[in-house]
Length: 340
Image (cartoon, rainbow, N blue to C red; front, side):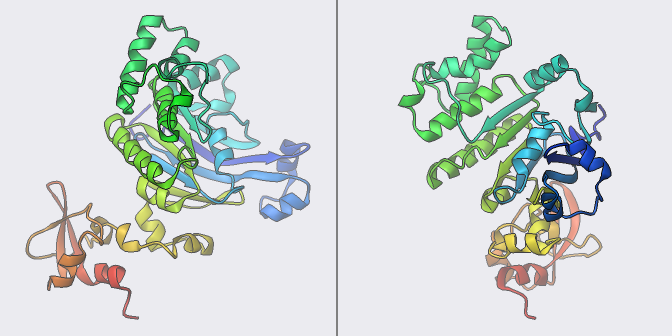
C-alpha cells in the first residue's frame, strides 16, 4: 500500500434493509429520497456514501439517532454486508474476502470499542484486557505482559486485579479501550464510547483519548452525536442525515462553510472563535509584518492580541514554514461578529 492510498476507502456504498434489497437497488431510480425508499418498504441505512480515511487520521462521524453513522461503521468492518458499492481496507476489497481472511483481518488490524463496555464480570481487569489475545491463541506469559503494558497506558496501573463491579464508569471504559488496544490494531473503531459517562468523566476520557492518539497515531473512526465532542477530537467530521453524508470536512470548514442547511443548524450555536485556527484564515499571497503567529492558534486564543494589534495582515507560520498572512479583520469578524 502506497503512502497515498487511503486506509479505508468506500465508493458509492449503499446498505438497504428490506425484503430483497439487492434487487431493489438494481432497479430503483438512484435519485429517490430517503422517504421515497421508505415508502417502497425499504430503509436506506447507508445511502450512496463515498469517503476515504487516511493513515493516522481521526474521522468523526456524527448525526442524530437513526442517521446511519453506526451502520456505516459496521459496513467498514463488514459486520454488515453492503448492498452496493465497494469498501476497501488497505487496498483489499473486504466484500470479496472469504470468512477466514475477514476474521483474520479483524483480529489483526481492527480494534472496536462500543458504548456498552461489554466487560466480562467474572474476570479481573487484567483478564478482560488479555481476553482477545487469549482468543488469538497467544501464550499466557506474552498476553499478560501485553495486557499490563496497555493497562498502564490507559492509567489503570495498580487495578489489574479489580473486577468490573469495583470500578467507576470511566475506569470501566478505560478497560474497554485497553482491551481493544491489546491487539495493537492499525484501525480503531469507536461507537459513542463516552456517551454513557457523566460530563466531567467524559471530558477526562476525551483528554485521555487525545493523549493516546498522540502516542499511538492510529487510524480512527469515531462515532458521536455530540458536536462539541466532534469538534474537539476530529481531524475531519462527516455529518450524516438519512443515511447520506451531508458534508465531510475539517472542523474549521464545517463551521465556516456549512455545505447544507442541515449542517448549518448543527453549527449555529458553536463558538466559532474556539474552533477556527489561524492557518485556515491565511492568504498565502499576502505579506504581513512583525512577529508571526502559529497556525494552530485558535481565534479565541488570539483574542487579546487581535483587539490590541494594529496590523492589517499578520504573518502565520507552521513550524519553520511561513504560510502567508492572516487578514486581522477576518479573525476579528469571527471573534466579534461581522459588521454587515
